[in-house]
Length: 575
Image (cartoon, rainbow, N blue to C red; front, side, top):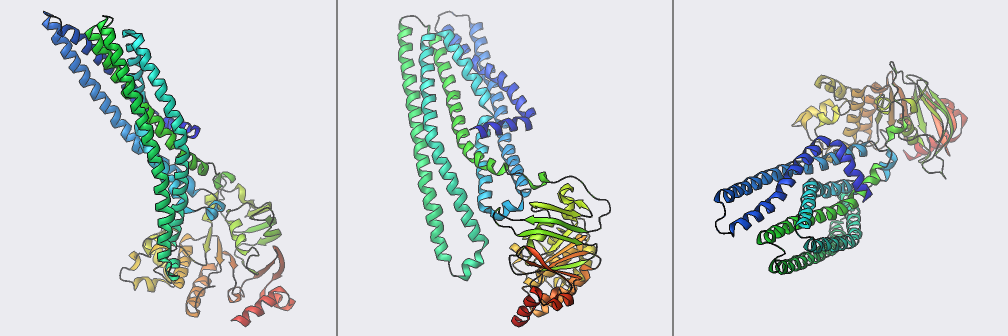
C-alpha cells in the first residue's frame, strides 16, 4: 500500500496544476450538491402547507433546478478531467518504466525474462488507469460525504449515529476482506508475469519449437499453465469480490431500512417535520453514494498496490549511468589501457585476473583462447557494461568510470557474431547506427561492406523489411550489414566479436574484405576462434585461466610452441 501512496505523491507533483483545478472545482460542486436536499426539504414543507406563498415556492423550485444543473455540470467537468488523468498518468508511468528499463545494466538484461517485465509494466498501467479515474473524484465525493454527515447530525443526531455506525461496519468488512483479496491478486499477478514470460519466450523462439515439432506440446502447456491456472485464480478473485459486494449491499440495505423505520417513528412523534424527513433521506442517499465510491477507490488502490509494488522492484534497480561520470573528450584517439584488471560475473569465480594491457591508437590486437576464458568479457568491460572488481580501464588515459557512458559507447562499434536487427526496413536498421546519416552516407557504407549490390537487387531495395531479428537475411548478409553500420558509426575503437565464425567460405571472403577496409586507422580488437582472422594482427593475446598466458604476433607465438601453437594446430586439423 505504501508503494501506491508514494506513487500518488509523485503523481501529485507531476500533475499539480490539473489536480489543484480539480480540487477547486470539487469544493464548489460539493457545496452545491449538499444544498439540493436542503432546498428540496424546505420546498416539501411549503408544498404541504395550504396557502403557502407561491412566489417562495417558485423561487425554491428555481433554486433547486439551478443548483442541481450547476452541480451536475461541475461533476461532469471533474469527471472529464479525471478521465483524462486516468489516461495520461498510466501512459506516463509506462514511459518512465520503459525509460528506466533501457538504462538498466546489461547484467539485469541477461537474467530478465522480457515477457515478465512487459507484463509487469502493462499490468501496473492497467490497474492504475481504473484507480486514477476513480481517485480523481475522491475529493468531491469525500466533501459531499462530510457535508452530508454534518447536515444529518444537525437535523437529527440520533438518526445520524445509525448511519455513521453502518459506515464503520462497512469499512471494517471492506478492510478485512481486502486483505484476503490482496493475497489472491498477488498470486494472480505472479502467474500472469511468469506464464506470459514463458509464452513470450516460446513465441520469440518459434523456430526452435518448429524444429523439434513441439507445437502441440506448447499448445497444451499454454492451456495448462496460462489459461487453466489463471482461470482458477481469477475465478477465486471474482468470487471474493462478489462476496464482498454482497456483504456491502446487505449492510447498506439494513442500514437504510433501519434509518427509515426510526425516521418514521420520529416523524410520528413529531421530532421531525415532513420536510426534514425528506431532507434527511436526501442526505442519507447523498452520503451513501460517495461512501461506497470511496470504498471502491480503496479496493482499487489495494489492487493497484500489488502491481505497483512488483513494478517498483524494477525501478529500484540502479541505472548503469548512475555509476559513471559526465566527462567527454574533445579529440578522442582510441587508446585503451587495462591496469591490473580483475573481474568475475560472480564473487566465487574470476573470469579475468590481474590483466595489464595497453592498446595503442590504430593498433589491431587479437584475443584468442578456449571458450569461456574471458575474450568477450574484454569487450563488455570496455563498453562499460560491467565495472571491474579491481583495477582501472582507461580511454586515452582517462578512467572510463569518469566518462559519460553514452559518449564512451559512441566511440566504439561492435561487429558481433550474429546481428539482431529490428523488424524494420534495411535503411532504418542501418541508420540506427547513425540517425543523422544521409542516403548517400548509407550507400557509401554498404558499398564499403560489399552489401550494396545485394540490397538494390531486392524488389524494394533499401525499403525491404528484414523480419524479426533479421530472420529474412542470411548470416553473411547480416554480418555485412553489421560492417556497414560500423562504417556509419565511424568509431575510434572497433570490436570484432568472432565475425566470421559461422560463415561459409564465400561469405567469409566478402566479410573479410569489408573488415579490412573498416579497420584502417582504427584501434581494433578481434575476438576470434578462427585463426585465419587473427594472423594479420600486430599483437595476439592468448588468454588462459583468466590470465594473459602469451603475447606476440603470429610468427613469434608459433616459435614459442606454447598454447597458441597448440590451439592453432588443433584448428588446422579440424579445418
